[in-house]
Length: 111
Length: 112
Image (cartoon, rainbow over all chains, first blue to last red; front, side, top):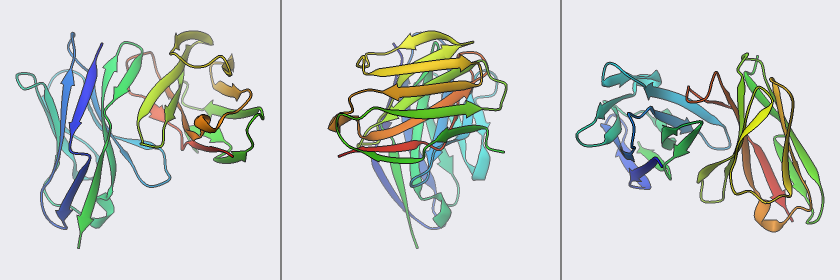
């Protein structure tokens, strides 16, 4: 079965600093990978996804992620954090007919 | 228009009661899901339906019964509610299994 590990349950950055949220996956087949964001008391919004093709994927709100097969990683980055990026971020891998989620990383942005 | 909508958004009820959460999607997708997010924010699939047929039924108590009257609707009925059922329940949909899943806004269930 596929699985996802998100390193760091909490990440704190200053406004304007680089955001790096880590995700490693385990998959027996070529994975489909996703990042979702959840703002307080809201649902999950898709940030970006990797299926096939280009390994650097660009998403909404200036986020991007790079699929690295050799490292089994799909880390999420954003060059410059904004206060509005404060939320919880979930990495997920497609496992047949469902998504398997990581435990989530709460991003805090300091002014 | 909301793509995946679920009602109610907030529900507070007593132990032992029966409650339902309704979900509708207007994306034309053929697969719908129920996910549960527990108090630690961990997300886990409960059920999945494809064209009204149950295709995923994780280890969920029998007190939880999904019903899909048509492709656009997937309701969740919960009998004899317990304290441990308190969670956020997310409805979601996708076009074919394995594709991007779109989530509703969630239903916050509190059992007292």
